[in-house]
Image (tube, rainbow, N blue to C red; front, top):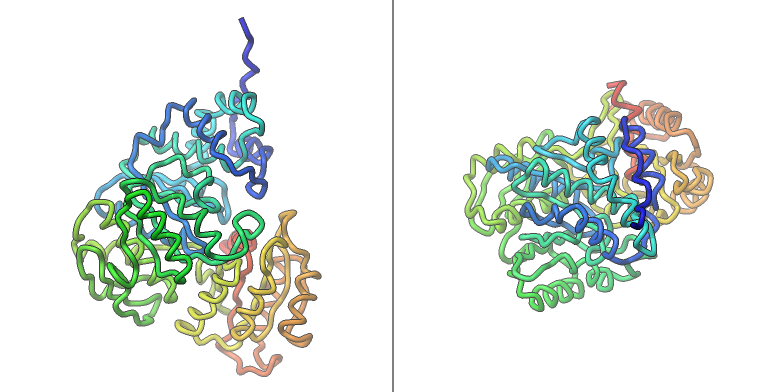
Length: 452
């Protein structure tokens, strides 16, 4: 009788789970194949077949839109699972049930439920399961175990060969597509759209954000090819009106089934209004028909999206935003002009070295009086000094300083924002914007939460 390899030791604590997951291939190391995740979910008993799902892809906005979809579904008394990535502060944020991340005990349990099968996949495949594939398996198993009625699932990267794509979602949501993850997905939006269109499955509804013509053509071709029903922003649904309001904005939304007036959304910027209309259309397409207008208003009024134009502290105001590519930075810049009148606004920026950091700096330059270049704690972080050199080319030497320690960089930004006259701006309405990377924002959030 052949002996199977020894099963991995079950975890006792959250830290042990974290360590076990991080010892696997990182999210940044990819081998484009669904073989490992399919082998894994087969051993787990195909948990992803036990619930219905809504799947999201796109360059920016996936997490905010996922949170909005989940809030609407929960308002309809459906039990939800939500899988998003990356996390801001804690790994368990990636897997939520009933609107809340798994607590430490549940996260350990979710890991231990799948751990006995990880080594079997590792032994049979050319490459071992990655961190991301393992946590996707954990999420799907946890959702089946709950059990949830519907899972809202955000892709990690791309679409067709993303590990999440072993689901056959009822609704595929494609947010605006721009260039990001060039090394893996391609250098132009149409090429990237081919990969992302892979989440549109036969018989599903494809809810499509407004796109450039070449991207729209790719998505429509895929939807037609697989016989998906098409719902397009600006044609079948869309934002009718929006106006900034205290604490967010008020929108009127045209859905696929109804018209929803005077909806307060406690998030800032036109991009969040767009995310709201996509979320609404996705939930209507899921099969709920026209939604009660009061239910929609109540649900949207509860939406939160940590690290997305989130005011984390006052006096001076400190805003966190996870923009990490030019498309996200442009949306951030527009939202700043639209919703705030900070003067001066001082940027504290830490970026990943594999991103288009020059494009992010250029997009934010018109909106920032000054930028403090810093770094986060990961090995992928660009050094503060290297970012500073690029920032000087974009902002000029007199508008840039370099402070490697993130906590000190935030303090420097706050001092500059409060002493506006030092950079020729009136005192009293200065603010700090921490941005450039989800990791930078997550680390800043952890630092600042205790000081509010």
